[in-house]
Length: 251
Ligand code: URA
Image 1 (spheres, rainbow, N blue to C red):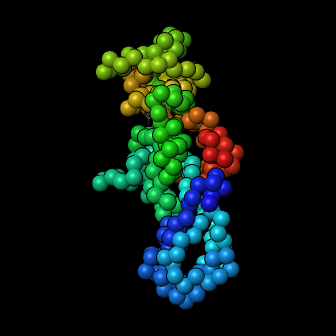
Image 2 (cartoon, rainbow, N blue to C red):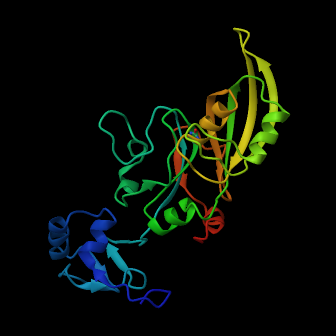
């Protein structure tokens, strides 16, 4: 039984192969050699059922740490696709090591190819559903550089909801203007952040298009309570901390 009282026994070779210890055939050999020990007893039959949450499994002398889910924070770089496969481009999975790929993680939601920032990867489908459910209105905050002078009128429009190119009226978004500057070619640029509560296709870019402006740089900095760790170098990732897991209800 698991800690939650649910029956969780599985075949020993399935548990070990899911954790990347080898194929079923390899594990059969290892078991015959006496390399697998469960609760202090050598297990020669890898087809036996074990409870990976409560049984102590050792593989080649090392205790196996069992877990079903992984939760990774990726600082997505531009140029990679938020998908598990793509025929042409590199995907975010190409940035992960094999020790995580064995869990078959997928990105929670999408960022455009040229968008950077916070991307959560997990194999916890329930969490992904919770975070992406349109009914939950999980806030997502982006930082952007926009061509044109974003002003208080835009702040008011975004607060009221803007009409996108397909006629959809967005939920109110909170637009904060940080600074204005002039690019070398004389074009005005605005540094802003925008929090939205839904996730329509290219939503941030299309909201600015709706007010006649163009996003030239976009980075997601938070999703719900989870914030991008600014010490996480672009293109790198790490597991969520206990504290971050509790922010998403997975402590
Ligand atoms: N809005 C966009 O326009 N692009 C993204 O990648 C995310 C939000």
